[in-house]
Image (tube, rainbow, N blue to C red; front, top):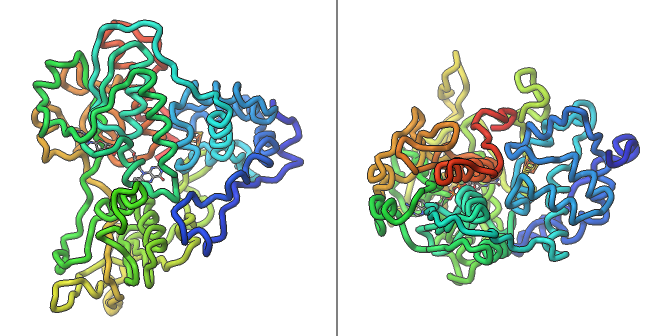
Length: 486
Ligand SMILES: Cc1cc2nc3c(=O)[nH]c(=O)nc-3n(C[C@H](O)[C@H](O)[C@H](O)COP(=O)(O)OP(=O)(O)OC[C@H]3O[C@@H](n4cnc5c(N)ncnc54)[C@H](O)[C@@H]3O)c2cc1C
Ligand code: SF4
């Protein structure tokens, strides 16, 4: 146990963010660099090393949280990093981006603020990179088997790293021009600087994983050819089809899916563009959708110099405390103030967009909305509450409907879909097609990075067993195994 009295003597302290007015002028991560390290050992010392660590169960990866808290408390960073990597290939991604269902499940959280698990995680991995403790781990011998991974988001990368280390020859196919999936082109630089992806890719290349960018499976290479070339296939193609809003005026200029808007801003940061062709500069911006994707649009619009930013959400404002149907240790749906919300803008709840209004040139100028309320379990419009708000740039961030089928991927492989339209799989992450596995959002629907990594690792074990008859890779998490999370 780290510090037997730590939870009594030390209060919770989290990473400091730079002042909002300062950080909206750049795209760097919002945190004060170096602010965590001086406090983090004492924070790790708040861990009570519970007999039944519910945080393990809250984390879809089953991260060994009390073990690495103990090492972080003792400042044995190399041992902490080894324990962290035992369950998580990319803690620098989750340590920055995870909503931390582990903290919702922390036993200390029953009557005190939870341990800052996510901050400890990111401190350990940043220290490990700084100390040179993160090195390539190439396999000792090759199996002679080949695997194609389709998609280079966190699920594809986790599967590829596990399978490469198990001795298989792995190639990752990615239709975009860079590796990383939504980590690269969805999530903005101010949430995670892309250097963190780049150095992992270097590590993976040094281990032997091959990367093929700008190759879309189904279009550039068909499924039959891929199957002839490889002994097994992992589909980690994400759930990238955006949900649309088919109301009058949707065709006007200036209305875009979030995933049309955010990648262009990221391309500016990559140095591919000097300015984004879809910019919020000087515009009244409306973001439709109150989730993480919407928050990323809000933060991006602030940095581009928007005149105003309004975020609309059809559901009522969530509460700030757990309610009776979301007891500890479940992951509750609470009102969240993200870093993007700290920076400004207005959030409007319980409203629905009825139509858009444009000018004579076909550019959107106003969004018409109406208040809504739940009546007998159904969402109904409140008469007399219609109004319009200025809207010169609208981003649609209302979620995703599933894997892209337009390229023929699903049909060419002959994959079965589940009732929600995701690629169906069994407990080993195998699809209905022999030798073809699925991991991440493609099988789960749009979810979280931590789940994508967990599923990528689990699918790797399924593939390894398929190829060799046995596997020493970690046992799979079943989609329902750790159900404290979303
Ligand atoms: C804007 C945004 C912000 C988010 N923020 C967070 C956050 O803060 N925290 C969090 O936990 N989660 C967040 N999420 C969710 C998280 O990013 C996803 O759950 C996660 O990235 C899923 O990983 P994946 O590997 O399954 O798929 P993806 O990351 O979507 O990667 C799939 C990849 O497959 C490629 N691909 C698709 N079809 C083909 C094909 N036929 N051939 C070749 N390549 C193909 C795609 O180009 C893509 O690169 C966010 C999502 C969005 C959209
Ligand atoms: S990956 Fe997420 S849930 Fe798991 S320990 Fe880290 S922050 Fe917590």
